Image (tube, rainbow, N blue to C red; front, side):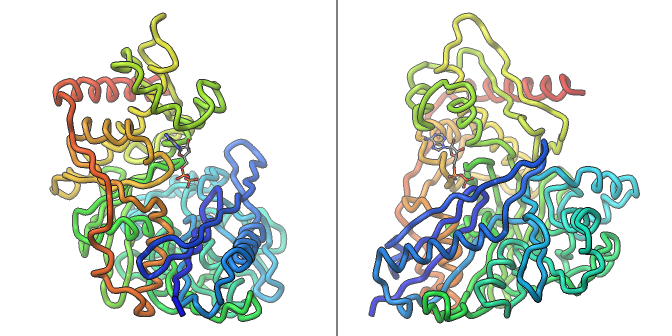
Length: 490
Ligand code: ADP
């Protein structure tokens, strides 16, 4: 019987279920959208039950469409949207409130309270993160302070989305998370790889509500066999960006990937070096497999592919995201236009909550093609900003960038990224890097694959072609525009 590994890739906008065969080829893929709720400006929530039911419904589709025997699935790997916070009652299995999504800024006041107490630097040194609503700890605090009955109920427990899914899929047996997810909570000490007592005290979060921390690759639970007769182990839990790093085969020190999705996430493998950044980058666990712990430096860009979405749905400049490429290629240059896509402030390395977007350099001769081109260029400039900071922090020159995500199909974007950063861009032919990462780790755990199976995958390369001096001028203009946008909102 042919055997498979199944990846559950639970993302912010959708859940994807992808089945890989031994050649790492996709034999089944399906996706279900998740409804996002915006109860107030800046608040972003999802229904945790919806998230779980999306997985169940996709499993139903898998067995109906493929007629694969559930026993042919050797292992399951889960990759998930990180930081999103779920709290539920361990006796009833019912969430106490909506899941607070990583993007939600609803804990800004709580964060301010902690900043006023002067705790930023200590928290940064212990966790490798910055004190920001992005991460889970202040989201838990918010639930304690705003949802009646939670703070005095000892049966309410916490989890990120991986924890919630494993708990549900195991029939309420396993309350676990892995080191990559734990490292995004602000409660995890990145040096000891354990929950940190002092941080839990500071955020007034009882350690008893926290899941047990496991390796990224290990048998964390068995699926409840009442779920489609799927009596197989869950053998990997990994945060989505770390999963993409693994799926892109960034195993060595200096290997780096960017995901051009709704936002942009750039991760640099720093191997055993735990570098606490003083330039606005985050330090995170890349994975723990066996005794081996690898770290990464991370930069998050809030607006990447969603800039193209805005041109399409907000300004109606074109009807499909891929039109941006045709338009950009139809003009010889950006006509002097620079777009700063700071719709919700600026993420790494600037962390400016107040900055807002801007378009510079408009003249009467500018048309939608120049705007489309400037938008794709802005996506590349933001990545270059982070590459430069990473080079400075590590002292390592970056010569090659691996890419994935929805917008990585855009050849103009990738060629421009190569030109402006003066590096090689490598796009693997397999587009589902995140799911592949989770599947690979699960497959390693059960001996379905070996690390050697993950190198030399088919790919497309982009090499710098443009005049480097001209590229420097464009990048300088970007930096000027960025500075002006920051000034404008001061
Ligand atoms: P998510 O972050 O939800 O996983 P995806 O990785 O699927 O997102 O990427 C979706 C984003 O990619 C959208 O914001 C979309 O505008 C952008 N996108 C999709 N195709 C293209 C394209 N051909 N050119 C530029 N951007 C694109």
